Length: 277
View 1 (cartoon, rainbow, N blue to C red):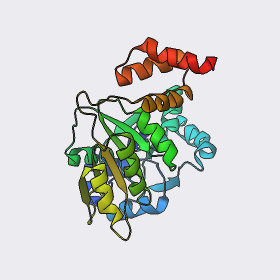
View 2: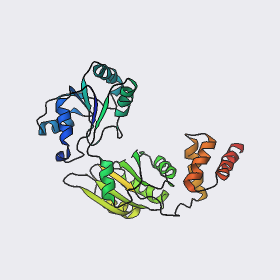
View 3: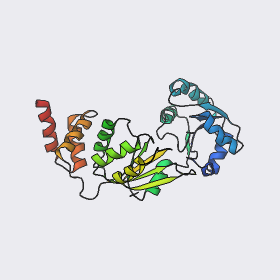
View 4: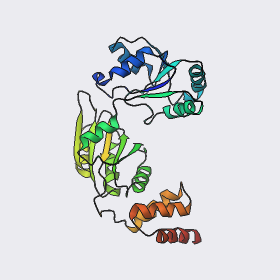
C-alpha cells in the first residue's frame, strides 16, 4: 500500500456499516492508530484482520505523534480510526493531519459512517444548512452562552451530549432558543436506536420521566423560523458578553449585528458605552 496517512471511518454502532474500502485499508496498512485498542480489536476480529494496533488518543497524542510522523516519513502506510464514525470529529486526529500536511506526507480519507449526518437525516429538520457544535459544555452557563452565540445562525445545529446531561441541555435549548423543535437520536444504528422529535420541552419531559437515559446521544436543533430572531435586550447583552471573550469590539459588533439583523453601529455603541462605564 502506498505510504501515507489513511483517515478511515468505522461503524458508529452496527458493525455491518463498515465499507469494503475501509476493510481493505485496515488490512493493508502497517499500523492502525485507534482511540481504544479494545474497541477497534472487536471490529478487526469480526472481519479477521490482524494489523498491529497502536493507541492514539487525547491523553498520549502529543507524546506519540513525533514517532508516528517519523514512521510516515520513512515510508510506512498508517491508518487512523476513531472508536466510532469518522476520525477528526471531536478527537485529536486533526493535529496529526495538520502536521502531515505541513511535512508533505500524503493524507487520504476513507469515508463512511457519521453520527452527525445520520442524526441529521433522521431528524426531520432542515438539512440544507447545518452547523456542528461538537460536545456541548458540561455547565449550564457555558451551554447558554454557546446557544446564544448561535441563536441567529440560519441552520440546523448538531451537537453531541452525554445521556446524564441531555435533560438539562434541553432545558437550556428551550430557555435560550425559544423552545425550538429538536430531534434527540440515541444509540444510532444499534439494537435500541431511538429518535425523539418535538419541541425541546416536549422531548425534555419524555426523557425526564424515565428512570435513566442511556446510550450515545446526538442532538439536532431546528434553525430559527423566518423572522423569528427578535432578540431581547438581555439576549443582545449576553451575546456581547460571549463575543467579547474571543474577539475585539469591532468584530464582535459586526458579528452580533449580522446574527440578529441589527445595525452594526448600534451594537458598537453598546460596547463603547460598556467601556466608558
